Image 1 (tube, rainbow, N blue to C red):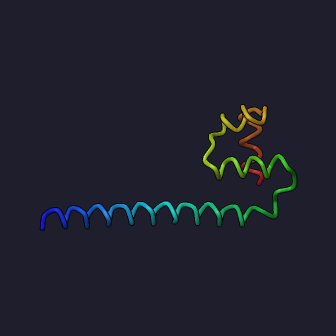
Image 2 (cartoon, rainbow, N blue to C red):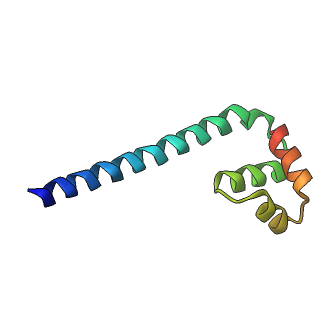
Length: 78
């Protein structure tokens, strides 16, 4: 009986964690949809995609050869 309770508790924890991740993705998607009309160039699209993928501003800057300031500015303008 104790093992069944442990399995059930673990199942609840995993479902909660999965629902939390889904909620985060829904929030990120809603944020992009709000800002999509402001995106005017390929660079802005690329920055937004990389931010949504979870890349840090430093990683984006290194990959795209942009400064952190440019990334922040692009993020805030979008």
